[in-house]
Length: 155
Image 1 (spheres, one colour):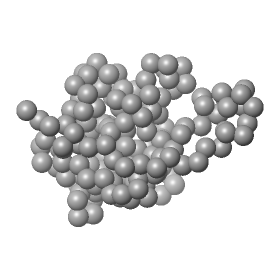
Image 2: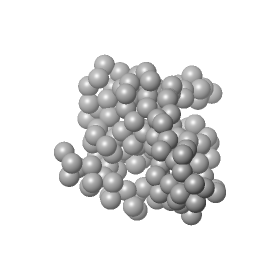
Image 3: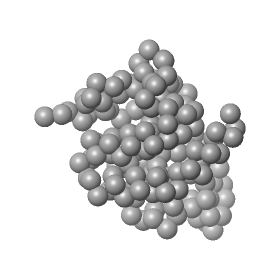
Image 4: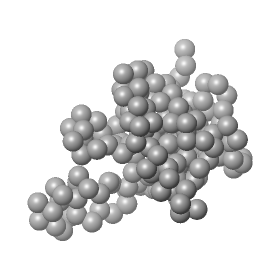
């Protein structure tokens, strides 16, 4: 059987300092729903997928985990079950590609549709929760063009 923890381990992350600690409670609530918590990779993250594809997210990359709309936050966490798929998805959307273990771009993972599919498949591999994976995947397929286009316009 496929060993999830061996093949797709959790990366080592460092939380970036929050801006809400010195704010009144009502401003902290607003910031909670409007500004995501961010983490930085403190070492390169290496992944081996069951199909043999090797992926690496470099040290120093910043992620906000899964982008969960405020009204769904009581039901899903940005750094919960969706997190490992979301880290790959964030990097792929931000840069338009993913790296292999030697730092070369992976040709098959340079399109939005493929990065969305990778997100779904990694969530399935790491959680075996198909309903959650397809629910989240349908969200990124439906609304993902906003961040995808935003990052493409920056380049």
